Length: 605
Image 1: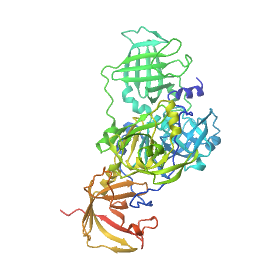
Image 2: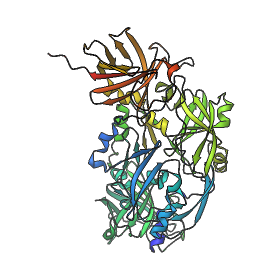
Image 3: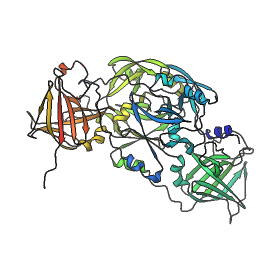
């Protein structure tokens, strides 16, 4: 089999990008948060939140590689190397295919494999299919998963965007990707690592069809498939064939790619056999083309027909133990996360079936969108009123956008209003996107769940299991805030006053923030919003119903943590706020108060 044919074979289970597989390109950050209490944009350092998955992923037996991510303009970027050329790629679950800047493709002299075009925010974009063979993403090389990692070369990405290309949903899912927003980390592993607990061991054949004809099997010495050391041995009568394995998870369980063990890990490995494999308890079903010279066309179902070159094999492993419970789900749900199922659609997109109050509100989950968006016509149809107008930038150019503040978006059992009062959205025209989905008979999309809401939901996205894990940022940061803090200094109207008596304190619990020792003791409910560079804080009546339409914040501010020190800026006079603050300070005439706290020392026993 030729190298090119081997790579085409590897893509049989991966969707191609066409006019009807529409990509909603990343929307660059361009709208500051608009809220009733002047919660303005500021810049300040913050400590990253803690995700339980980081502990799970450190288990070497699971095979994950942790890749630190960089945030730029509300987007998550990974440092990569493509045949020696450094590139920064955007994590974009709203893209069906991966992209690189055409300049990189030209420098590498990659051969064109055909032109493609599709819809993007701002218009139609065009590109060329190319294959660099492999991409090194942080410390993970895609060559450990497959011998091919095809991308689309597109002109002008680096010039227009703060990155050089895109790691798509397809590519991330292929590599078992988990996107950890609180820790700004991507976890990747070989798909075979995830499938191995189900595959491992010895399986005895109980039926075999070849080219549509049934074989009579020897009951005493039936064919045997042995999965060991991440390799497959097929013992059939007096012959034994050994293969190294590549595995791709798919809708019909998995794709199996087999090649000479001598080429293990080589990007130039050529697949000599391929097929589908699925396991149900003690039963394995395999549809294989063991001789690549026989038959043609993709292997799309578990069947063997005359002239197909396919073998349909059923095997048994009595007493096969079920794989262990999903360690990711177990860890995150135990730590208060809500598991929200995602749907992978045939257009290459991933969808969450959300609700906006009582309205069904299907949304694409798009890590490449720096803002959450909603279909403008659909928002207006349910009574939404625009708070302003602006433009968003996408790969196809600029597009007009209205601004909305939406209340009570539900994602499965997770409700956004328990974390922050409003969801800020850009109103976009998604009709072109939905025209393509309509032709494929897919659910129309009413919104795009972008970075801000994923960040504010402390999102962990498991693309191997199509699960979105969410919990309010307050629950993520609260363990660091919990306890009593003693006021050490206060700044108002530009004057800093040291406080030495330790009488004024702030005590933080899971649901309350209480201030004591000042002019008046107060207690509040509180919400926290993660804005990458800082935490936003909003206080409210502790007896208020967070889900009520009449719910309002009564105080606002922002804070940063530095170990046992905490700085809190509170808005004390909205009328004096003429410009957005740029640092943790309370200048003269600014209407702000800066409070500097230290964590209370434990009482001596």
